[in-house]
Image 1 (tube, rainbow, N blue to C red):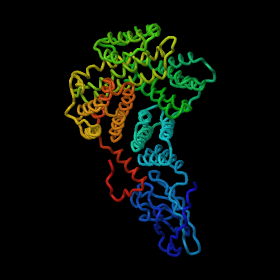
Image 2 (cartoon, rainbow, N blue to C red):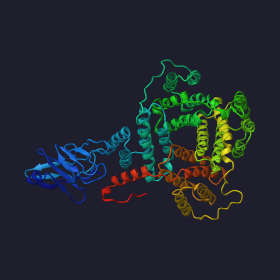
Image 3 (cartoon, rainbow, N blue to C red):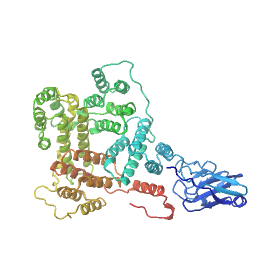
Image 4 (cartoon, rainbow, N blue to C red):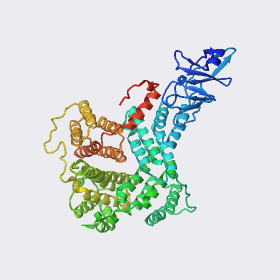
Length: 599
């Protein structure tokens, strides 16, 4: 159906406009329009400053430049274009001089809002302007852009404008993974955080230099061997060209994952797990934005992979027990163990029991439990699921007598184990041998040793709420009351144990887990959260969904994640203030009139 055409309305007598310089046109059904006479020309502009909505009729015009008198944003009166990128262009309106009368058509807005706000998002990211980013996200969503189109634009910007995958792209991808479970307001806020952190990560960084694939067509096996060789000797250019050759040859995501994770796990638990987690996030990013962008995104992880330092260089992995030598004795056995496990006709389901064994105090017993599970028919992804559960329990049992910084040690282990699990699921298993990729499966053993080494964080262990006859009857029973109490707890320091108990109470009473997950996301998105908090939430949601919501492992996973988030809340919430201002501006609110922000 064709939109009705907005009629022209009378603005002023030309003589009066020439004398006064400007006039404000009010009317029903349209916002105020500012009509300006300058250098014998007449112009009509939206009267709201596009920066923060201040009335432009209170500004001044000189030499063809309109200046807003709040933040001094400046605009070309003829085009409406801003001289200050932190502001925005002022929408123009058609204007006609008919004899001695000035008429204006009050069509306020951009001709192509989606194209405009896409361009503005690039401006905001290029100059790291948080308010511009927030308004651009709002504008694109209002113009009908799907959320993952915004993720795509930001991800490709980050891949081009930073020489290597970093924290910003990880946050963007992690939040992209949880968008489906968020209400509309939090979707916009999550996108703002992800895009803003990507822009911040690119600021001051050199852009990435493009490299080209090799001219030949080596086999997948040859390319995988080359990638491991170049990674081992830290030859970044050779590693990137090898990877690009595999992408150009049409290697599947599973094959590319096998290549990269085989090379990555040549160094155990590299960079405290960050390197492997970044590689996994790059794959998840492509799941969101489309695998046609693989050649732009995947090479960004190579720099971190070849530069990383493995745990074999760490004293803790060598003394008092040489964990590296222990694991190196196991690797040759993996193909035969998986082949034996493949002979079992029944589906292996001992994930919870294995997770408990992985929390043991003897590394030899931990390794043996993994070997037994493989021989009994556990697939590589089964091992990853049990491993991630064990790592989450370290968070759930984290003793608050530890130093606050020790939370990060437990966090690193959990997010690494989640990444190993996701990688092994992606690679899949060969039905003939039962293994996904023997080299990549080493990540499970590395994660198991990391879980073993963090056992001191559970001494003394925090009590697991809802277990050992802990009925939690001191809390309300209603789902809404529990969620309100939980959100209130995140507003105060020192509520780690209370938050864990509230989550346990909620799940034990059988309330809707999806509502709880969305509320935990809301609690995080209010904060000026650190990188690790986003990682923990996303990994926790993924691992929670691996189990039945009323099961003990699921409950323990969410308790661990909620306790971690509570340990890092509240913050100043400055980013929330920016997002709130942007939302009110885009809804037409008069921010300059001193309304309190809606937090």
